Amino acid sequence: MSSAPSLLVLPEVLLGKIISYAAPSEECQAWEWIGAVGQTCRALRPVVQSLAPPRLSLAHFEQYRSYRPGGSVVDARVGILRSLSDFSWKRQHLKELHVNVESVLETRDDSRRAIHEGVLALLRALVTESSLPELEWLDIQINPWKLGRSGRSVDFDRFDLIDTESLRLMPSALPHLENLSLYRCFGGETGGEVSPQQLMQFFQDLRTPLRSLSLGGAPWLTDDHVEAFLPLVGQSLTCLELNAYHLSDRSLSSITRCCAERLQSLTIPAPCSSSVTEAGLERMLSDMDIANLYLALCESGVALPFMYRTQEELPSILALTRVTRTLMAARAAVIAIEEEMDESDDDYEEEEEDIIIEE
Image (cartoon, rainbow, N blue to C red; front, top):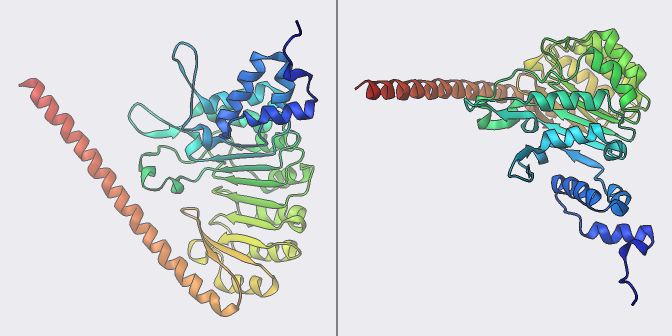
């Protein structure tokens, strides 16, 4: 009696295509499926490992809980970051890593949301100590403003991920980095401030030219930093975002000198929330052909789009930034009042409960 035909006798390419049809479309489920199939059948392990997603967005794991035998629940964010560090095949062909503010928070017992220290430690180790040989895009945007109304109970200032030691290690860990976005990743008590020389050394050590660069939310970022590193990377950049209120027309002059060749998209601080002047902005625009210009309100991280066509449009967009900044300040004041009212209500309920218990 002949044995039943086996999938394993098929050519590897055909077998991989057949197996791929069974893979979940959701990113977090796909990673769990790959691990489960690989552990179930050793012969299929190389096939399913080749199906590892090239893109990882940590936010997709924030709402997902992986269930284990016995009913225990595992935070999938911690699980995926730990497995990426532990198993080189999972990170070998990873090309994009995206992290936003929702994906790094946890809800504490008092209902306030704060940085998940486990996620922070694992993420720092991943981008500094592990090798991500094919990673092209590192995108970390820790912007509390994007939490919207729910952001009023967030208990943190900056995401203390990148410091001088991280910058020293990252070029070796990310040898094919082409797109880098770091917003509010600096700061804290572990050496978050970076000198112009240290930042210049980081860009000098990168192995490949950058196509896009976004730096923001770093209180130490000044014109000196921009003048130090931009000559090293400016010629290859097509997209540049510099969102820091200490910047002035000196940075605009550096952008004009170093980035005029290829730059198509530019985000810089609006004059109403930085030391950049309207005259300096006009000079830069007259010397550069930029398709997309965004003026950022540095206190919030909000960037207003300005599709530059004629010099006559500039006064209107500058007026818009001033009005928007005023409206956002009013909104922040309203949220602060609502927080105080919520705290007062909580105190009143606790006091009322104490009276009832005493009676």
